[in-house]
Amino acid sequence: MRQIILDTETTGPSVDDGHRIIEIGCLEVVDRRSTGNHLHVYVNPERKVDEGALAVHGISDEQLADKPKFVEIAQQFVDFVRGAEILIHNAAFDVGFLDAELGRVGLGRFREHVRSVVDTLAMARELHPGKRNSLDSLCDRYGISNAHRKLHGALLDAELLAEVYLAMTRGQDSLAIVDGGDAAGDTASGDDGPWPPVGLRVLAADEAALAAHEAMLASIAKEARKPAVWSDAAA
Image (cartoon, rainbow, N blue to C red; front, side):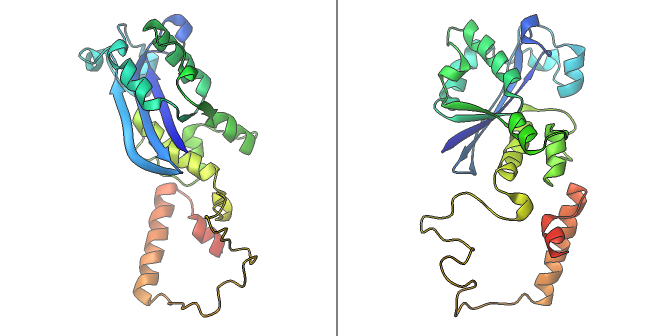
């Protein structure tokens, strides 16, 4: 399945007040793997950026002055997302802005161009009721390093959201990848015979490999500010 992780930055908080999109970040994922294909554009909004919004994303009027207007990138954007399942954190916000921008240039509504829209914020609230489910909170919960995220940025946030979504949908806390198994129906449940299989050659890690493993776990724990899931499982 082709999915697009999407995020936008805007001149202000409300499309109803005439605020506009200033940045779009899209990251392509196919069969749960990032393809490296992405779309990232800055847009001249033809209006001023609010001070409050500037404090969030740091994108100034001066930076946007020579950027293309939305009408100039609209078709490129529609072609990139066409037919894909779109994943957005707090989808109502971004879709509202995209509907307004596309409507201005005669391209209808956003959902007319895509297969479906999935709100990862709604998913997170269902999985973690009563907890904070901002992107930063989810990165912390799933051990995803966001130390480099000093300000919001559409492509950076899309990249982080891709990691969060994969973590939320693969049973990471139990170390079990629940994605239907492979084509042969292979599982580790024992249904297809004993595990490990009889005759399987097992190579034990030497001291250097074990030391490298421990160093990697320590690095993960330092970046995530909590122990790696492997360490928790071993404990």
